[in-house]
Image 1 (tube, rainbow, N blue to C red):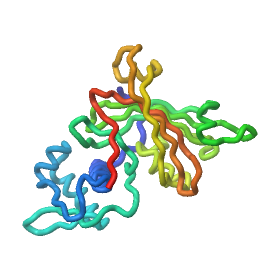
Image 2 (image 1 turned 135 degrees about the horizontal axis):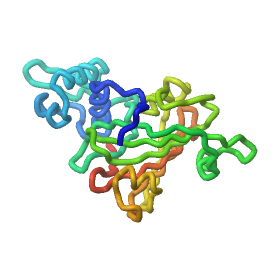
Image 3 (image 1 turned 120 degrees about the horizontal axis):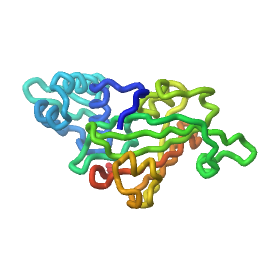
Length: 240
């Protein structure tokens, strides 16, 4: 699914460094572990080896990796900050996948259910921004997303204003960042725009992730719904 009006894309080397950052944070590689050889890792991620080396250089600059001449790249320490995709829990069935997104539409909304999820009081204005997006992993379509946040954060908003990482957009434009999330997973018949987007039968039941996201100030700033294709992706959480 394509859209002429696209969001601001992250450079590929940043996408790769964020993916590796997330994998290290999740404990996939621990301090002292050696990463796969560069040629193997580049092939697995589907990127040029020059792009991968630029990503690794960024992680080394951030203090997460140590490059040992003639030996390879080793995890130096676990992240003490947050990657852009720190809370991203979808991955391909065989693991990993570089996340990208394509925004379908941005519109004002006044959804009462969402207003309650955001703890907007009955006497407050419940006007919201609603965003619909397509989610890819390694350029493969895996999920459809619907995201809401308070309209008061932006008087006007269009697709070209947005980063494909909304968490980055919040940080750079709304002066807050997401510090924790709570996910609920169920299975439900999705709306037509979801099944049509994923190319599935209208009556199919899909896994759905309902997420509430808190800012660094302890306020619920975002509510989202993600329906994902279980034959292409899985939801996974790892703890160390």
